Image 1 (tube, rainbow, N blue to C red):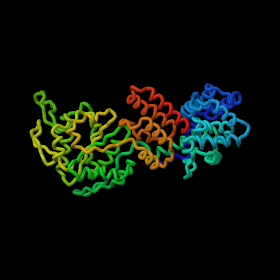
Image 2: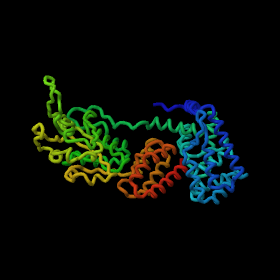
Image 3: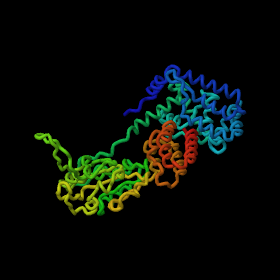
Image 4: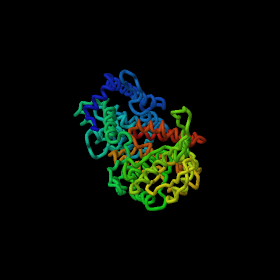
Amino acid sequence: MTTPSVREVLEQVRAEFGPRFVPARVEAEDEARRLLDDRVGRMTHDDFLELGSVFNRHEVQGVVKRNRFAPAFTGYSILQATERIDELNEAMRVLWGPSEDDALTLVGDVLRTRNRLPGAGSSLLTMMMYLRDPDRFGIQIDATMGGLRVATGVTQQYRAFSGEGYARFCDDLLAWRREWDVAPQEHDAVLTALLRAARQNTVGPEPKPPVKGGGATGSHSTSTTTAEVAFACHLPVETVDSWVAALTAGRLRQAFFHGPPGTGKTWVARHLAAHLATSPEHVRLVQFHPAFSYEDFVEGLRPEVNADSGGLNYTVRPGLFRALCVEAAAVPDERFVLVVDEMNRADLAAVFGELLLLLEYRRQTVHLPYSHQPFGVPDNLLLLGTMNTADRSLALVDFALRRRFHAFGLRPDREVLRRWYEAHDDPSDLPLRVFDLIADRVGEDPAAPGHSYWMDSNDGATLERTWTFQVQPYLAELWFDRPERLEELDREVRLLLGEGS
């Protein structure tokens, strides 16, 4: 996929917003300036919320909306900042005062020392500078910084941690706007669109596990090394090596990945399976559910209509696992892998039956109850499962089954998230800061939400949707008896998104 050019994105954004794109934003900004002229230095909490709401107003195809930026950009930032409203009003006198140098000095001081004006962050400060002079100053948030980096191709990232950094951002922004004839009111929308287009080009939908070329029969060689699996999963290669050794060198040829939601269990299991199997065709994937049975997995009776009499005959049919065992036994020099997703959603003792014995003692056979045929599990068939520990159901898994599986734990991991953004050439630390905040508040709870929730676009709107529609509802179930704890965390997350997005 080719990343669209600046001109193409600019035309797309202008077409999306319609003819009132710039004029509607100019009108909203002028209204914000009138509010500041009238009330600056003595603004109430409601005045600050009105200022944020007005600045967030624009039009899309003639429809008035208040989502020019993510709601947290102004709403929650202002909520935090107005807790020390006298200090905020004093700062606003400087930011909107006659001396531009004094305003820029204050911006630099607050960017370097965030606790000087809690909640203001870079968003509220640079919004004020932009309102002072939109032809010279820009709005410095992650989306505009990342978009400008994409648009200009610079290698050094923009950071909102100093006055010098803000000056560099504004200079480069002005040069880019002049080159492409972009109005000040367009810059945030166009840069955000450029950033998203670039990320879609490099990330896109969840990719498939690595595909291997067909190796020679009788060889266990694969075209994906453990280093490549580790890179795809953003894990240390030593970890992957230890898993492979456990599954291939020891007596147990089966393992399950366990951990809370969002830790990449299925992703890792599929990549590891693609490495272990001799051929992509030798990998099977099945998802267990409460109705999944022994008859589905091993063998069972299935009704068939008798063509002559019209009555029903019952025929023994092999289940998924038995069929794969037969296939693997026919080519003992090749390796097969079965991946069982959501393993603990089924009644495992009932589904596995006598397989509990056969998985451990691969050279033994038993006579199956329906077909009465001898059956064993071949050495060249590996089984990988995933188990969600959020519902504490791992503790309920039959111990006889658990001791016959290696247990590979996956926990929420900041380093995995950092490596993911690094691999996608995205230096933003906002997702990491959100992850850190949630991890700190949730603590060592074994059901803590994982890192993969945040493996998406780093713009504030996407992060806010992830929190609102995925992580927050999950924590609401986890903390059903502590709603005040979630309310406090919700406030903190939105404040952080408002400062950084």
